[in-house]
Amino acid sequence: MVFDWQYALDILPDLLRGFWVTIQATFLGMTAALILGLGWAILRRSAIRIMATMTAWVVEFIRSTPLLVQLYFLFFVLPDFGVTLSPFLTGVVGLGLHYSTYTSEVYRAGIEGVPKGQWEAAMALNMSRFHTWKAIILPQAIPPVIPALGNYLIAMFKDTPLLAAITVMELLQTAKLSGAETFRYLEPLTLVGLLFLVISLLSSRLVRKLEARFAQT
Image (tube, rainbow, N blue to C red; front, top):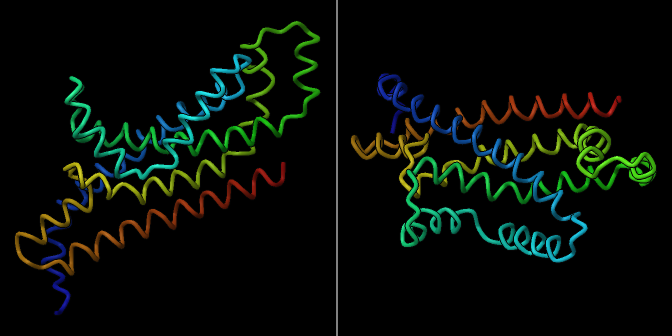
């Protein structure tokens, strides 16, 4: 089979529309993962023992089950309990929830890297727990782990083709439909691979720059 450049150009607009859906799902999913992951990390250090233990169990459970199973559960099972989400929103929630368990471990490593003396100093100053986290702990814990969080952004981007399983018209799903119409899969799948490759390489380069920058500080 010979690569048909004209066919590739004809389907490119549709693929770019699917690619935009992929980008949006990654951005929104990562935003949710960063916020929820920080919440998990703080709850695991709760002074209330049962709260910390339950949070640890939830994080381990989600992290130990496949993302695809979680997407199926959200998409096919939740409606039985009266919760129906659009395919795109289901994908964002699934990505955010799944990757929040990984970002929580990154945050936890950063938090544990803050010297104990900082906690003791905040306590000596009679600072509330909220202000201790806001003004003392998080400003020191988060910057060093930003490169590690960037790696999970790349991993999430490469997992977005799983959203095709719940009918989200992201990049791979768009390519599959284009191929099904003409029975030519060489061009659409090649373009999908190239688009993922370009974005992944650019993101990896950005993460390496961040690592180098924080290594100097």
